[in-house]
Length: 280
Ligand SMILES: [Zn+2]
Image (cartoon, rainbow, N blue to C red; front, side, top):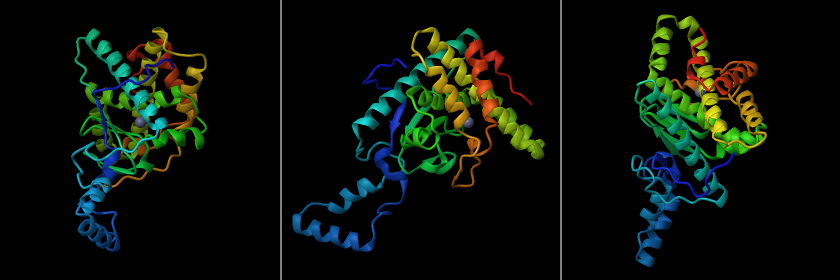
């Protein structure tokens, strides 16, 4: 995919330095605290708060902790920043051509775990969208997993995952998400089926963005296949763990690989979100 290296987005919040928002000193044992206190006395520097800053004593002050990032992670951050803004600009244009207003979602980068309006999430949860705070959460380490465990390499596979999450934000804005939640409460026996419908629509929306990116010459040869590969690889059997009793949309089955691929393709080929109606 063609993208601007060094890209930064004002909608990206880097919480990788805040250690999962755990309690102050949560990762320090008593022995470590004693040693840090002794060091502080000897060197007349506050080692305890220095260590606390790294282990996350500011759960809500996102990005205040020191972010230690490899060049590869820096590049991944720039890439997701570019894709986020590109996808949201695409949706802003689509909404305005339908006399509707698109409001941006924010992207939170985290490591290990993160506190969201939807509860505490571990990295093992995978990327997710929280309707409660309109934020997408990604641990960049997921992309290594996507490559290694799910065998879906390539930058466009990574872009697809983010575009899918933005698809969930679109569903919040259109009211589809709320509509499905109500339907699930009315008919709990079909709750999972409704969730699958929501997931497939988000795949279709990811395809709508891909269509726009393609028409603007951003795609390289093989990118569509990478996106389709990711659509098929991610989801279905991912083990989801979520704290706080929140039901994460992505914790449900996403539908079969064939369904996911077909949905992505539908959006890609039509470029029209109208082709992405909820399948119920
Ligand atoms: Zn999803």
